[in-house]
Length: 114
Image (cartoon, rainbow, N blue to C red; front, side, top):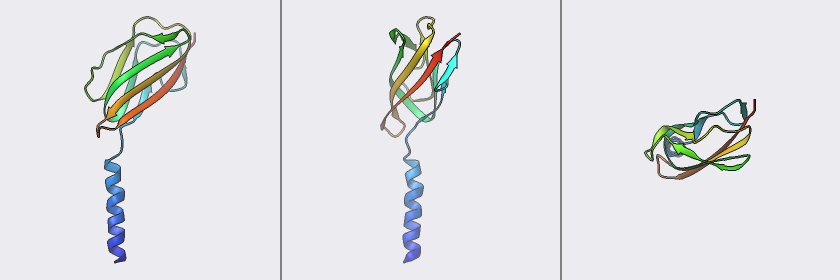
């Protein structure tokens, strides 16, 4: 009986890993870094993610960005600022749907300084 219970618990723990949600593994610029300029906003995910919304907010408010990556689920997402970004603190907020269909969201910050 004890072996049956242990086997079932092992199966549950193993199966739960398969239900894990995608997450941003790496961002460019990296979170909480200071950079001299930004050519692109990039996110790399451990599993495909469909990024449904992304915003960039800077010292003068919302900044216009253009999605280079479409609405398909991807492991690498890229968006381009519409103009050169002035010095200051920036926040990237994103929302998406993970490969298993669950809504996900995240935030990362960076600073531009010469």
